[in-house]
Length: 614
Image (cartoon, rainbow, N blue to C red; front, top):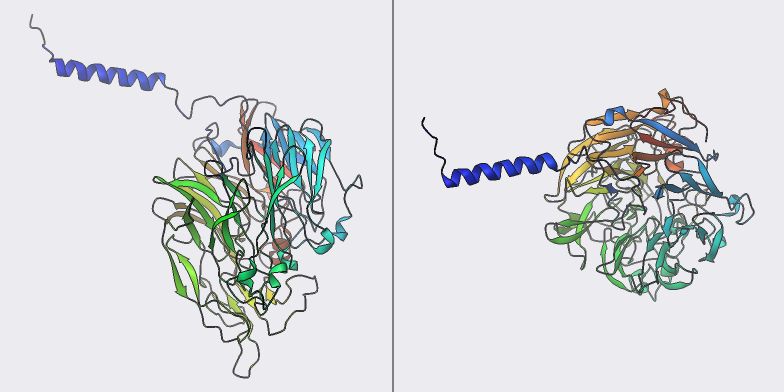
């Protein structure tokens, strides 16, 4: 009998192959691995980097089509002046969430049952809402958690720490006078041991730039609310000081949560428009630190670097979208999209552009009073936002290029009202982006919403609603053909990978659970899509649902695991500007009032198909 001889090298190859197969067989599949009993969503953006990514695969691209509402909770606030814009946080099976009346709810994250509620309006602990000045809807973006406490800011400028187990007040701190048109609608961020062991901070800020407040960021001691430092966002030298003192009411409010790098010890805040919004007459100069990304020392609040997305903003082009931290190769990066439609990727420790930013000439300022900047910064990152008219301009107003100064005149010397893209509510609004370390893509929604602009020298009369001093611009423009886009940008190339058009300009944040991206549309449709290519895997349409009071989709989803089951929670309460601007001529359900928090999951025995009216 002939024996087959096997060389030593071949024997080693076979052995290694067998070992490799065994290793693959023994190592659990990412898709088949059981999730932990509880997986938290502990911060507004899940982590302090604001990535909004959860590394969990119970819901995946193969089964997401089977998603369904698992539970529903109603806040019972159906106020046409209110919104639901929060991103729920989840800690050890308990969800903490706010509504547009500054109520805080603690819910069982597995079934939606209420554990406790803190309602300062109903107990007389805060002034009536009609005494408070709020720009664009009564809203609260959510809470922070740490040291057994839940922290949040109220519209009356009071920060409150609640006992997470009971909802009882631990401390309160007033940061501004609401009678001066300040408000807090931002979500706080909690930073453990920021100033040393046992010395944690709560980072919070005030809004109200539309009413000429001065933006401020505060760091409060988590134990008792004592202010450890504060930073004023308007720099006197850049507002024409000493010729003008407009910096004292120069806007630059921070009305969305910062990202925080605890290794570098930096907080990254994004600032709103300079004030007054459209009239630059009394504020010559770049108007730092308005419409910027600003890096602050976590320990002291001292500014370390800044990047201004719009110089001398006279278009209400807030830098509103929360910044996101992620790596680009070996570089620590920060990403941010402005309302100007540009996406910027910056080096995190210095603010230097990783993808080149070029100062390009802006349209000439022929107004004689606006002090418009000669150039504006353009990013080499491909914009998801259309920066020019991509649909017919049927508004009846002449189309002008971006950065045309409001106040230009016709041949007879009269101010011209013109249409421009992006408009003041176009580009990237407040709704947060997300980042997946698996795809290395940034995901966000943006807005094609041409608006009209007009002003004149000395125009300091507020609109009938008290907004936008020195400003005349129109969001609700018939013939403007607005729409929205959700999409993905590859952070390694700066190119858009995929995009999905939706009928209403996007104001929903996103979240990523494993390989699945979640977001909603303005009329309430909720989607799960393949994060790699944008293929729609599941859509919840409230118009065909038995759940009542499901409003527009202008909040931000959270992905978590409770009792071993993965959930995606979303708040359907609509948005006041979109309710006012689009319901009449785009979709009657745009921004629709609602009070429903819906948690989606894969079906299990005992799930209810209808609203269980928690």
